Structures are given as C-alpha cells and as structure tokens.
Length: 447
Image 1: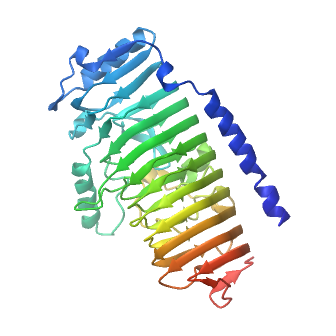
Image 2: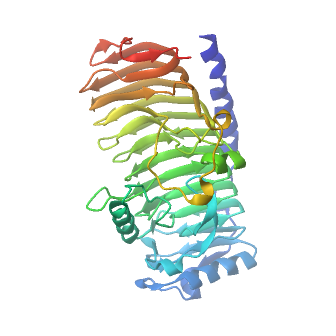
C-alpha cells in the first residue's frame, strides 16, 4: 500500500503545477488590439475559391504590425495550409468555416513528426511552429474535407496483398498541428472531417485545450486515423470540457515510435483530462501506441464514455517501442454501451507498413515497453459487451495496477488478466458480484 501512496503523491504536485499555469494564462480577449479581417486581403467566402494566399497575406501583415488577431468572418473559406506567426492569434467567428482544399498539390511537404516518426509530411491545414503564446479560438469550424483521403486509405488497405495497414503510404494532412510551441490555447472550436488526426500538439509546453467539439464519421465511409486530440511528447497540458466522436482514439497520449522515438527521447508528462465526453471512438483516453519517450503523470477524471466508445481504459504498445508509461489515474468515470472496459495490449499494430528508413533493430534492453503505477478508481459502466483484457508481457509484466470502486455490468465475465504484478482489487463488482481472480485464467506476479 505504501508503494501506491508514494506513487500518487505526484497527483497533488501535477494539479498544483497545472493550476498555477492556468492562473498565469492571459485572458483570451486581452490579445493585441490589432484585428485583421481576411476579407480585407481578398479572401472570398463562396465555398469554392482557394484562399490560401489571401489568408497567409493577412497573417503576415498582422505579424508586421506587431501582432494581433486574424478574423475569419462568417462564410465558407476554402484554403490550403496556413501558418501562424509570432504574436498572431486566429479567431474563427460564429458561422465561419475554414474548409480544407481537396487538392493534394495545395499541401506542401514539410519537416514534421507524424505518428511517432520525424519525417517530411504534408503540412496541416492550420500550423503553428516554433511560437510562443499561440491562441486559436472559435466558436467557428475547421473542416478538413477528409472524405477523398479516407477513400484513398481504404482503397490502399483493401488492395494490399499482404494486408498491411497503409498508415504511412497514404499521406494525409492533419487539421491543426502545433509544433515546438509554448503557452498554447486552443478553445471553443468545432473540428470536423480531418483527413488524419484533428488536433496534434507536438514538443509543446504549457497547453490549454478546452470546449473543443470533434466530429468524424464512422459511416458510410469510416474516417481513417481520425484521432480527436493527440498530445505528442508535450508537457503541462490541461484538456477539459471536450466532446469527441470520431473513428479512432478520442484523446491520446503519445511520445514517439521505435528507434526514432528512442533517439528523440521526449516524454509526454503532467497532463490533466477532465469533464470530457466521448461517443463513437476507439477509446476514451488512450496511451500509445507511440510510447518510446515515456508517458507519465496523467490524471483523467469526471469523464463520460457514451455508446459507441469501444474502450475506456486503453493502453497499447509493442516490443521494439520501449518507453515507460507510469503514474496514470482514471477517476470518476462513467460509461454505457462500451465494447470493452479494459484494454492493455503490449503487442499492438504488428501489421502496419513502416518506411524502410525506420525499420531499425532495437535491442530488448531499450525496446521493451513498461507499464506501471496505474489506478482506476470510481468507474461505473453499464451495458458493456466485455470487461476486456489486461495483459502484460512475459518479460515485462504490468506492475502496480489498482482497481478501486469499480462497478461493471458486462455481457461476459471478468477481464482476462495475464502477466500482472501486484494487482490490487478493492470493491470491484462485476454484474453485482465481488470480483475475484481466477488463477486458471490469469498469470499473476509474473517474473
């Protein structure tokens, strides 16, 4: 018990640190007084004209004035990638839609990090790179026009003779990518139909994300790789009051992939996720599968998973990836209509095609992932198909997992548990009965 008390002293430290960060943030409305309307630079809101140059001219002019706010007024403005500048905030007004062009030639390839690898990739629709005090607000909409890319992805996947996931073969732009920035605010926005991830925050410090709505369809065409919010090797992050329905992970913590991620070696740490709702999606709050730089000190609380959310407590990684995922708390979570409550998968995504330059051997002493110090407290789930699976590796068991005040209503029995060391189960009910470990179907205290 002492191990758990000591391990979760970090929760108080993280909460205090992030509270001070939020108190120190400037008011959104106190940005520079210069306001630049993109229509004054020739942008046309007819839903057809590609306005990339006009919008970028407005951004650059605002920067030359010493900073201010770019105004996207009511109407549909089609654009290719735009790049924010230092001191320039972006405001998308009520009734405004910043809509991505469907012409791949409008998306320049730039140095980036995509799904855990540093490589060149098409720029996002909205980009902030190497800036401080980044502000992107609504209440308008950013629409990625993703359907043409989803079709390309599924066609490539179905036609692959080896049935490999063409994740890196079909280059798709993200909706919003924030890279190497500090003091970031993204708030009151509708993000929809991204060709790839909706909001990716990479190598950033002091990030506030709030009141974001994400929507991407499951049908008639499933929005491939349509993660809602991805926190990638970033620290001191608050995510609150977000509402997400997509066809992949809703909120995801990442930190690099395989040898390239181990080379970069930057963790995601000190993250709070609270008061969020997730509907149809692969997972509520997800860890991995990019874990190479480590993920630690993440507190998830007062969140809800509605029907269509496949999994609530979702961890994924694999051998060769490495990294330590530790000090994680899920607390005060409710769910209904879930496929699986728990999913700890340390052998994930083995069928994904990887570019040749990233297929480097990683020795086991570096490439063995570790998951430890995870608490799930005050979790109540109704009408779940399965309690799920909690499975470590034979040479890297999940360590120090605590389930406390967990009440599950499931079609099947308890979770399948293997290769877990020091599991604590306190007041865990499954279909109204106290949960006990079946030693024939679980391997505890694995060495």
